[in-house]
Image (cartoon, rainbow, N blue to C red; front, side, top):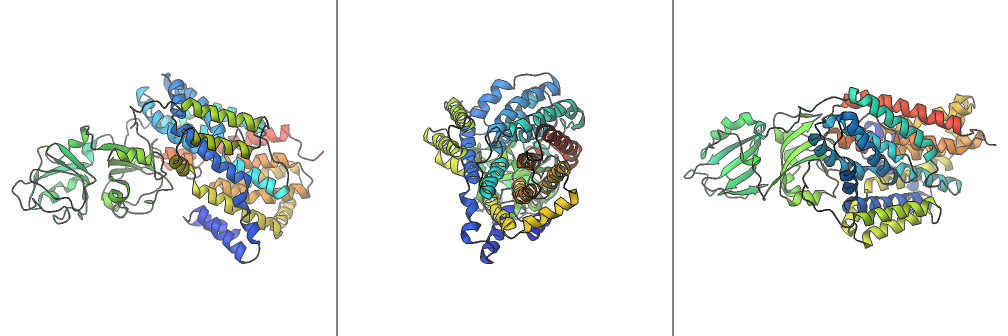
Length: 581
């Protein structure tokens, strides 16, 4: 357990890799039998998480979220008016859907909407993420963490588990106080970066030259002409006789009169003009072609996700042309464009890229996990006729599980199947919605939780915690919340919850305490991660679009963490008996 924590905290190794390695070691060493090690993969909580990913994909793919957004947002006055319009749909959606696709869908809509109502996006994006986090705590299916904790609780204790709305009594006060705090305080605390759009002027980072009609480069490929390996700039597109060649191949042959658009250090224009056969363009070196709408190309602003294969690689080594059919024009980090040699920039999760891509890139990446599209690309997309059907399926899932008509697992299985069968999402979209890293992390974490209990480590740690708190129930509850909250900021919310639950169950068993308030404390502490952009996926998603810096999250996130902790613990201490009756 200590080794796993150290690797998760001190390295960039993915939590799914760490947890799978732990599972393998526990099985090979004989600490767990193969059946015990792999039991997590058959856990009902895990399967429910996977099914709810598909249900969310159905709502997303059918245009269900867009339908709600366009009916609710309207034209409010000022920042607080805009926040008031955001809270209801985001909290409601996040209560019943995984909040990642909810926020992914809302980002481009709110980005475009903020410009229309003249409110800076930087005043809205963090509230969007925090509202989704708060909303996710409202029900058992609102976040994967709640489902996983419930699944592990069932596995370790053999109890029936919690109902769909059992956590709502704790979460509702948290959501109401949290939303009120955001509405009152955040408009003053969040930065106004309305005039600092990183990609506001294409002239700042593209330049244009031409191929001399009778020069030595005519007939040569891009590679042969030496235009592929330039240090400070690289070739983005060619305009030829009114047509555009995008994501230019190294084998593309140059023709006389070609206008070549480069991206990178615009001061390198003099270096380009030294190449025999390159002449200035009529635009004095700066490119106007990118400002013109062309059917062959689209300009896309996208955020690099944690799942992107290009993270950690220099742009030149990431093979954007081959892998994505797109080229990078510029990179922004912490709200500001990175200057210098574009090809040598190492990409990080949360970076905002300006890409020039073929139109197919947009539809291809809409359901992939490499990039989160953030600009309003799809203005002409027709409203899907299955949006209301998708909402009906979700309502049926919630109703069936909430009334106890069927189990949570069966309701989710039926809901996922109906989303595919009715065409709300196709099979490919359903497959892409399954976040394999989350699923593997959850399944493998169960093995470590089982080992902690089987070997007596949970008992040992429980004794230590009991000694530390002198057996005082309210102090034990506070320590539980703080431990999970700190672990969540260091590792992942699911891993933190799964590691702590066996220990907490041992503590409550030894001290003859009511387990329910402790389980609720774990669920909310694991989800309430506001202090850093890296602590929660939705925080990372709004990092680039809002033009934020790391300190912006600390400034508003630390008070949010403290507020949610106080409200949660107060609600639990007043509303639940800690000692078994």
